[in-house]
Image 1 (spheres, chains in turn yellow, orange):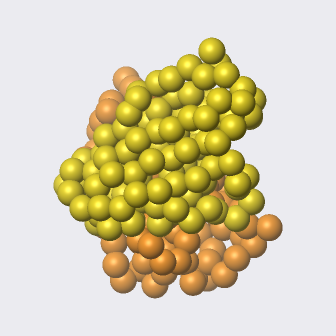
Image 2 (tube, chains in turn yellow, cyan; image 1 turned 90 degrees about the horizontal axis):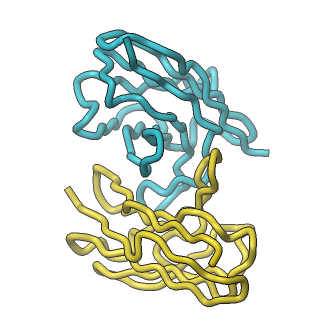
Length: 107
Length: 120
């Protein structure tokens, strides 16, 4: 099975900060990497797929990069509605594993 | 508007069974692959199962293989998860999710979730 790790597990940031979250896979997954945002009590929301393609309707302050085993999610200027937990997920091979999540909260 | 609505959760005793349903609307259900994902209380997301658009290809996480069965009825725009031999560790919110075309299992629309609690 492909293992996914994320760092950091949590971070505190202020509105307007640039935030970067890292995701790593245990083997190469090409660009088969998705990012989701989840707020408490809500279903996850797809932000980015294929490592760097912004899902329709997602603000352009979100961006993704990487290929192979190392990936990043960047929020260029954090807004109040971005405080949430972010998960990466590999879509390369079954089981389609998620990372453990990165919680972004208010400093 | 694309919608997926989960239902069927509840309290069940260890060893019991439960059937979850997911009603889809706003898109041609028979064209899309579908999945179940779960989230234990206070924990992260765990992919559970996948079914192709025709139902001919099915995959499961090892943690549920042999106990859970995914199925679909394209005439009724519905997805199902039959859960047998339930364990305490199956306690979670279960989400059905649509799989957008291309790039593997990429979940673009999610249900609101249905809570399954396995407890005596």
